[in-house]
Image 1 (tube, rainbow, N blue to C red):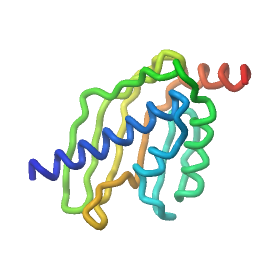
Image 2: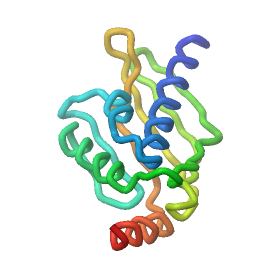
Image 3: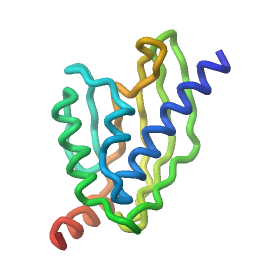
Length: 143
């Protein structure tokens, strides 16, 4: 069980590393790799409504990636806890947005599924964060 928990932890950290890469201007490729690409995946971002299905979720990550540029990074995940139930697991933690995006802190949850021996995200949720919404609006107006 300890090995499974560590595999899930690494998969969750790949998700947050991919988010950092996007905001730093490195595109959404790593984020795409972190997810299962099915119609059943879901996401609730801190600045928007629910997204359902990989096509819709992928489009939201591309929007975030378009805001990325060198110097916009600096995100942090802390208090990451892992629970594993067979081929399904979830993580909870506290995410701190990059300073360029308001530095807001939010509770986050990820659900992961193991298919063909690989853990990938099937659901992501982050609390709504007004400071992040304001920072993204400002970035959008500047671009």
